[in-house]
Every structure is written in structure tokens, then in C-alpha cells.
Length: 332
Ligand code: SF4
Image 1 (cartoon, rainbow, N blue to C red):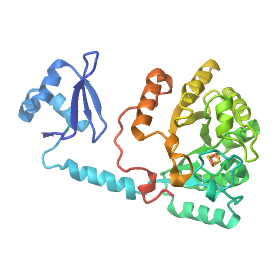
Image 2 (image 1 turned 90 degrees about the horizontal axis):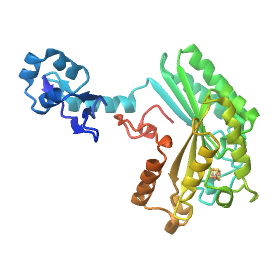
Image 3 (image 1 turned 180 degrees about the vertical axis):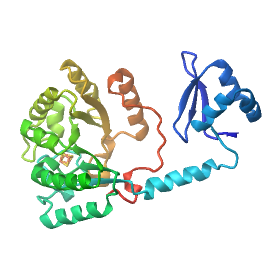
Image 4 (image 1 turned 180 degrees about the horizontal axis):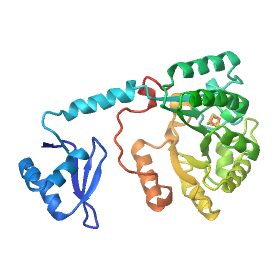
């Protein structure tokens, strides 16, 4: 047995000893005696004097058996994450149309009233049938344009996908990225029928700031409609979770706290998580001098989560074996 190359030992502010393994993601709290043993690692001593501890170290990847190469295991995990076929993740754009004209939209130039036609829908279902592995997992992210402008396409495709999933005993999960304007009660009911339980909506600050940045295509304000739609989701009591994105740059960074405060004041923290999005000047879609540099944005994000811990996402350091779904073979 040998010590894992990927162990990290540290002491928390409250004095607790922690060991974390970045290959397996295992984390354990150790008393002084065990911490010392793992610090002054002599495998024979651990195995002989404390076989139960040695076994626990092996089981959780803090140690590996002789002859095992952790680098090979990492390479395997990385290849499996990219080329393994157990899960199928699709990002589906049912339309390139959008009812908004946000100041910084990077899709401005490709936006058009185009909706997914029958032929493409059939080709998509054929792809799902061919690539979905029995007993696997399927995830769908509905994206746009504004995907709710194509709700009938979402409904029809979902029912067909669900039928394939049922046949192959596949677990199905879906989420949607929407501007929130068309999120009426009727639509929410339909989204639930489509197994969509997670919704990403964007608000760019208080009424005035948001309306200036994210108007309708004709220039009309959108804040009140979106806000009322979000308020109505309170009735679903966590059945629907909302990721409330606040797109910030140097001209509206105060918006982040304003939105978080409004969520708190209205008792919505149990189903809404507020977080900042960084506005970028992708392909010249916005003004570069207003955008934050990466470091400036990171500091702003850190300060926000320090003051708004309820919105802090789960920060357990989970190992990732690929960069994102785009570098895997199955997601599209
Ligand atoms: S809602 Fe999204 S797609 Fe529509 S204009 Fe705004 S940023 Fe662009």
C-alpha cells in the first residue's frame, strides 16, 4: 500500500484536521493521532499497527495498493468522461427567435424567426434512439434565442424523448434558460409536464436598471412581468428551482445586491439562488471598456457570496474529468 499522490492535509480555523483527496473527492476529519500517522506516512507501520485505518485509507483513495498507477486511473476517468456513453446530454435550441433585445446580446446577429421544423425534430429523436444507452442518464438544456417562444416544440419533443427514456429505463432531467417574460402559470404547468424543474432567468437589477438593459424587441420594459412571474413560482414550494442570474458590468454591479435583497424581502430564498454573470464583449457585441476583467469579476463574486451565504452554491470540491459537456463525445 502506498500514499496517494493527491492527498491534501490541512487544519480548519476551528482546529479540525482535514484530509482531502483530489483524485477521488474523498474528504475526512481526522483526530490528532490519525493525522500524525498520515503525515509521517510509513505504510508498514500503518498497516501493521492500525489495519482498520489502513483499510479506510484504501477504500477512500487516500492510499492505493502497490503497483496501481493513479496517473493511469486519472487518464481512464478522463477518457471515460469524454467518450463513455452512459449519459447523453443535449442542449436543444427550438428557436433562434427572441422577444428581447438586450444591450449586450451576443446572438444579435444570428437572431431570426426560425423554429425547429418537423424534419429536424424527427432527426433529433432518431439520434436519441440511436445514442441513448439502456439504464443510462439523459439531460436536456433548452436554450435559445428565447426557448419559451417555441413551447409547442419543447412539449412535442419532450413527450417523444420521454417515451424513448421509458422504453430504455433511462433517468431524465431537464432545465431551461429563459428570459422569464413568457413564464406564465400555464407555461409553468407545461414545463412541469415536460419534467423541467430548474429554470435560469436573468434580472439585471432594480426595475429601472433592468428595463434599460433588457427591453422587449419593441423597446417596452420587461421587469414587472418577469418579477410577477417569479413571485408566482412561490406557490410551487421548491418543486421548481430558479437560478437567478444577474448580468453585471461596471455600469450595474450594484444590481447584484439589489436583486438579492429583493429576493430576501419577498421570502423567495428557499427556491431562488442569485448569482452574477459576467457580461463579455463577445465578437464586439458590447462595449469593452464597461466589461469587467476576470480578476475584477472574481473579486466582486467573492464579496457577494461572502455577504450572501444563502446564495452560495455547493462548493464541495468535486473532481471533474472533462472541461465541460462540449468536449465529450455524446453531448450536443
Ligand atoms: S434574452 Fe437572451 S437571446 Fe434574447 S436578446 Fe436577451 S440575451 Fe439575447
